[in-house]
Image 1 (tube, rainbow, N blue to C red):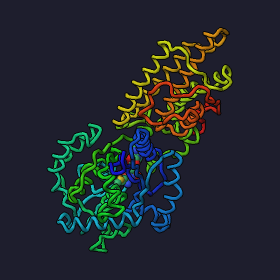
Image 2: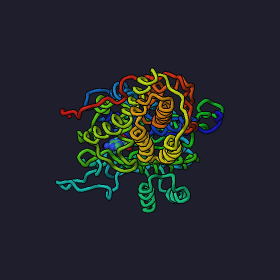
Image 3: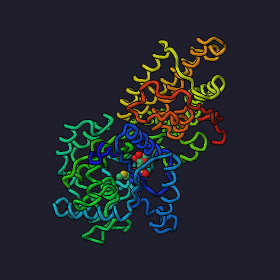
Image 4: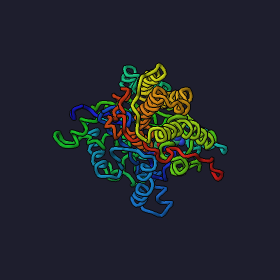
Length: 530
Ligand code: MSP
């Protein structure tokens, strides 16, 4: 692809830095990372953005509760928790935006001025409920009743606060019809379908204008024409997707080139709790500025603990490091993409994690690799033998690989990570069955030439299968698949790692070294202490 073509641009939400990341946050980032690695593997140019949402009352109050200035608080948390977690989960993001960076605040201010100048902003007064946990102005119908009769936020189960302020409003209501029309023409731009339906019915019930500034605290981006107000945190935060890639920069500048290359975003990955912000407010902001709308907002479900959304505020948050310490980053990534249907809620349990790790990774894939490595070591002194005459059983694996690659690609591009992984896993299972049925250890006992030739073909077939597996699984398990790639001699063979060539059979070069290194997925016991 030439560098003037548009890159595949995927974003995660930017995370509030009121606390350290838990596996709910890591879940979104892993999904984005798997998807972008999949596209990169196909040779596409990719831009993967994640970052932190640092303004607003939620962050401010946490900083105050810790007796720290908000800037010092966010700097500390980003440095000590949010950036390191990307390494913990092995995310290969291209950029990391913080909403306190000048590149963001300056572009937000410029955007706001442009919207004001074009008549989309006016001064008004707001009087209504606000949830600081969601950082959201609520409608009375959104709330649930608490035990003492007070009104609670359904997400946080905490009382909402009454806000009464004079501030600036964005004419959100004027975009309802245009949004409905846009989504009728482009139904694939909100996924899954349940999310599409939710947004459409919300839009059809009519929109109210949105207060986009606050005057009772100052932790935020100053409204450029009125320094007594700061920009409402969501208005500030949503813009990160565009400010990070040069929104509004002068023609001919580096920022403008970046914007042309990335915008509109291909996918905004979000949790279902923040769907409306992304599928209603954000596109309306873009329409107001005459900018193209993102191609897709994908809303995934929640990780549940004890039937409830995992969250720090409810003390159910599990640190990614805790799981990674047990099974490693690859199995962490594999587990969440494999066990939960992306787009639906899913419960996390240690039992399920350990069971899948053991059966699918340690016994399934890890054992397959170590067995063939051991056999090539024992029977061919660690040097990959050349395949001889091919039998229908060998050919069947090659054919299945072609189907597997196509199915995995289809499913993963649709964010159906589970089906994509299952397709690859079924190929692993088929190779394991092939080993059982072909009984290379029995064939090895025959000392005649035909037996040795057959043994060579069987072991070559297994190694070729592992070469393909190490490509197909690499977006999901980058570390162990890079090692497998080396161990089965693919690097030494000089084979390409592009998805396009994955199913071309017979790429490993006879004579390359097959290494038996430490087990990719060592056996583990379920931790008693957790
Ligand atoms: N700062 C806003 C997003 C602004 S984007 C312009 C925000 N931050 S958050 O830290 O509260 O949550 C961000 C995202 O984390 C959620 O949308 C979701 O993607 C993920 N999750 C947080 N808790 C989660 C679970 N328990 N389960 C799955 N994902 C969850 O909202």
